[in-house]
Amino acid sequence: MNGGNVTKVTEILLLGFNYFEKLKGLIFVLLLWIYCVTVCINLLIIILVSSSKNLHSPMYFFLSQLSLSDILLTTDIIPNALVSVINNGSTMSLTGCIAQFYVFGGSESSECFILTIMAYDRYIAICYPLRYSSIMSFPTCLNSVLCSWLLSFIFILVTTLMLSTLEFCGPNVIDHFFCDFAPIIELSCSETSAVQIEVVLLSIPVMVFPLIIIILSYGCIVMAILRLSSNIDRWKTFSTCSSHLTIVCIFYGTLIMIYILPPKGLSLSISKVVSVLYTMVTPMLNPLIYSLKNKDIKHAVKHFAHVWAHRPL
Image 1 (tube, rainbow, N blue to C red):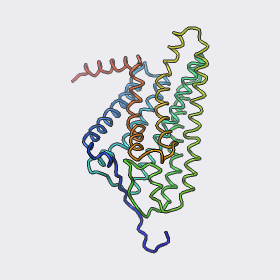
Image 2 (cartoon, one colour):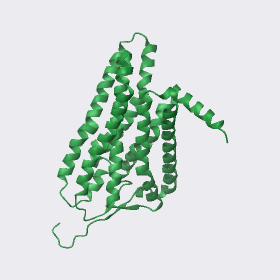
Image 3 (tube, rainbow, N blue to C red):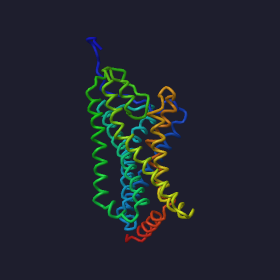
Image 4 (cartoon, one colour):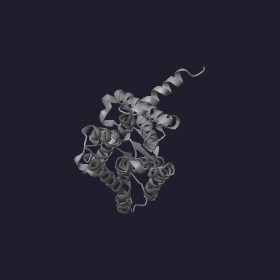
C-alpha cells in the first residue's frame, strides 16, 4: 500500500450467521439457551467444588478451573454473536476485535493446559495410587493451575501485540461470528508472515506438547488397566478417566478440524458450524459429561438443592 490516500480501518463488521438468514429466530433462541445453560451449569460446578467437602480433591479442583475457562470463553463469544443474529451482523472497534481474540485465545490455551494437568492427575491416580496424595498435594495443584492461566495469557499476549502492530486499511468485513486469528490476518495490508510463523511456533507449547503429554499419560493408563486381572476392576478404573477422555476427544477433534485441516476443504458455513462446536457447544457439554455418571457430583447437587430448599426466608 504505497498510495497517498489510505484509510485505516478502525471498525470491524462481523457478518455472523448471514448464510442462515431464514433460521435467524431459531439460531438466536438456540445460542441464548446454550449461553444460559453453559454459564449456569459451569457456575454450579464451581460453587459445588468450593462448598462441598466431598469434592475437595485435585480432580474436582481442576474441573472447576475448566468450568471457569468455559464461562470466560462463552461470555467472550456468545453475547456479540447474539447481537449479530438480531442485526444481521455486528460492528466493533478494531481494538475490541483484537481484545476479543485475546480473551478467546487465552481461554482456549488455558483449556489445553488444564486438560493436560487433568490427564496427568488421572495418570498418577491410576499408576501410582499410594503416592497420589503426596504428588498431587494442594500447593502442587494450585501452582500448576496458576502457571496454566499465566502461561496461557502470556503466550496469546505475544500474538495479540504482534497483531496490534499490523496496518489494517480495508476491507473491514469478517465473514464470521467472532474475531479469530485467520479472519483478522486476512484484513491486514501489512506483511503478516512473521505473525503467522510466530503463531505456528507458539502452537507447539500450547497445543502440540499438551496433546503429546495427554497421549503418553493415557498410554500408561491403558497399560496399567490391562495389567489388572479382573474385568470389573478394569472397567471401574477406566470409568474414572472416561469423562476426561471424552472431553479431550471433543475438544481436540474440533480444533483439528478448524485449524489443521486445509481451510479450502471447508466451506464458510461448515467452518462456522465447527466453530460453534468448540466455542459454544463444548463448554456446555464439559460439565454435563462429568456430571452425568459422577456419583460425587450428583450427591453434591442433591445436598445443595436440599440446603437451598430449606434455607430461611
